[in-house]
Amino acid sequence: QVQLVESGGGLVQAGGSLRLSCAASGGTFSNYAMGWFRQAPGKEREFLAAISRGGGTTDYADSVKGRFTISRDNAKNTVTLQMNSLKPEDTAVHYCAARWGSVSNYRFGGMDYWGKGTLVTVSS
Image 1 (cartoon, one colour):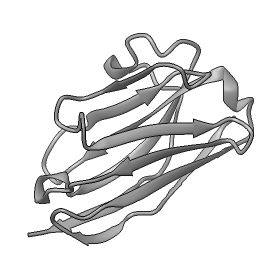
Image 2 (image 1 turned 60 degrees about the vertical axis):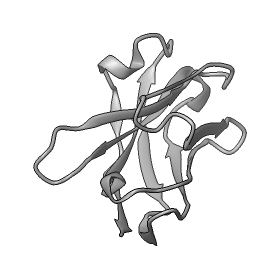
Image 3 (image 1 turned 90 degrees about the horizontal axis):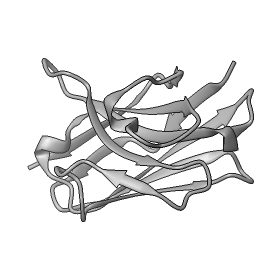
Image 4 (image 1 turned 90 degrees about the vertical axis):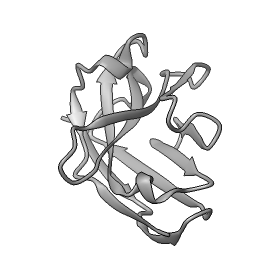
């Protein structure tokens, strides 16, 4: 059983930056493709970014490409989402997720584990 705990959310002004972290425990972290999703009030959960087990492959939603960067540290069992140029529409609960195996088609689901989320609020 893998536990995922997100941190780093908060309130930021439009144009600002936040760095989200997800700490994993209870499993072999390097066996899992990792990624981030978000869910705004009244909306469906949305894929943001994914990273392969070794960190060599990444994928981003069009809505965040060029603004967000995903990275991982397999020695520390962490995955990070650096968010720059934040917009009010980025306001949402942000979730970390793990899927065993390849990052291929990660954005289409099949997650094995989810964190409880961290709230990001971007004011205009």
